[in-house]
Image (cartoon, rainbow, N blue to C red; front, side):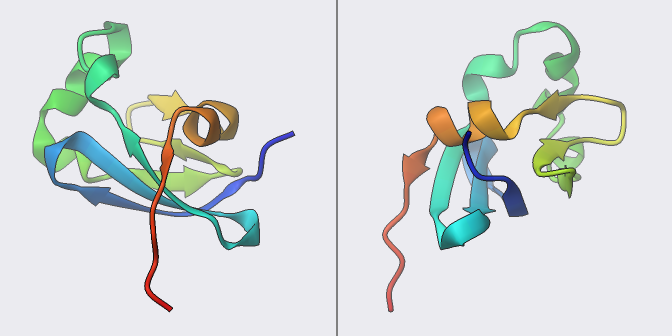
Length: 82
């Protein structure tokens, strides 16, 4: 089982900066999802930036969501300065 998302920060170019349980910081590229069904609404950058954490996953106000498994498995680790 992958860790839950504790915090999300929407970045430029449709990337989500995620902090997971245990302290892992990873970036998730949302661009591949922007042409798929309900995710099309995320192309509106101001709406994309409304992402929030709900029950360990990332969601948006109109019901779009990405599970913590998808977010962890498809994201890339970020080097964080100590």
